[in-house]
Every structure is written in C-alpha cells, then in structure tokens.
Image 1: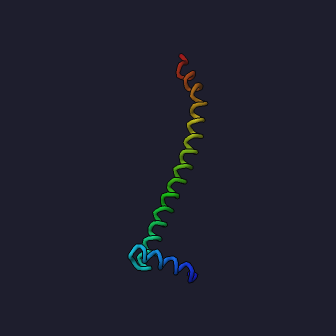
Image 2: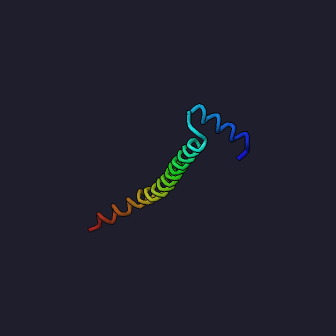
Image 3: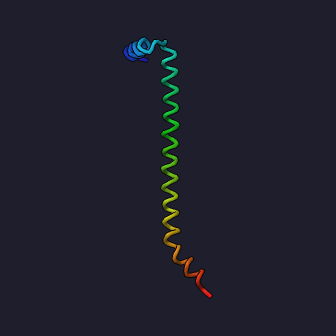
Length: 72
C-alpha cells in the first residue's frame, strides 16, 4: 500500500479513535456489503427485464387465448 494512503488511513483512524487494522477491517466490511447490494440490484434488474419480456409476450398472446376460450 502506498505510504501516502497509509498516512490517510492513519489520519482517519486517529479521527475515529481506532487503530489502522480496525479501520481497514471496517472499510472492507462496508465494501463487501455494498458489493453484495450492487450485485443484488443487478440481478433484480435482469429479472425484471426478463419478466417484462414474458409479460409482453403474454399480453400479445392473450387475445388468442381469449378467442380459443370462446369457441363452442
């Protein structure tokens, strides 16, 4: 890790009244949580896109099924 970054970490640790290891541990924990959230949002986006295609197909085919259902 570059010395300048370590200096910044040490400065933040002092402000937070903690040590470097604890600060880095917390930063990594937050990063991992945020990454999980970002991945989940992307999975949801993909799922919603796929469902929108399915819903469009069903909406377009709906009148066909309605006509079939009204046959004698």
